[in-house]
Image (tube, rainbow, N blue to C red; front, side, top):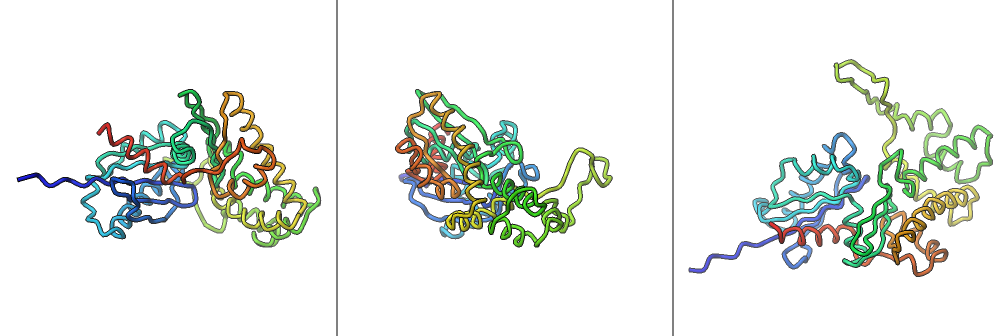
Length: 318
């Protein structure tokens, strides 16, 4: 009697700073279910929220597909994670207890590259809540950025949101010329610089830092708003950019200055194309195309499909 063939599944995760998307496919990469839930940056709370988001998302995806959760044992998983730039963070996350046949954890730029270029060489930038850049040229992998908020992520919605809030505070102090956009930001964050400061330091959330010895407070740590909270200002920014707001134009000039730095970096190692991935970046694409022409491109596939592609590729060694 012939032994029944064991089905194989692939699970991809696009773990962003704002939300976590989980997709389950069959062995032909046909989507069976897809779900979305909480934030999943590896640098937030030691990766615990990301771990919970993926496990919860996995259960939801299997339930939505009508497949027994026990089939995770026949599922190969690939996670592309915001905050995955650090080797140690990826290694620690991979070492957690997972129900899958295999798990590989990448920086989110890797799944973006796999999806955006469909396996071809070239460059890709992620421009979303965070930002990073990667290229493969002549078989060599290059990576820059992605070091996280606040020291990196220069092209991101979070950094531009932070710059917008800073400019708004300066405008309210009379140091720079304000605009309808700065007034809208002020009003959204409570109506005054006092309220903006309270918001920025997350005072109303009543969060406390506890030191290793159990005492409250820590001299070398500070509580503040997460990157995604600054990124939430981007719809407001685009609304006023489209109206020709002068401060919005100043902000777009800052953004394009950051992007230009990466364009020069790509061209220095002979990348022939730069795909733009991420909701913020794709909103900017028409303007980028005006400036850079055919050097910029929209992605062939989304990062989540890139995670599925890598899950299948990696499963061949298992």
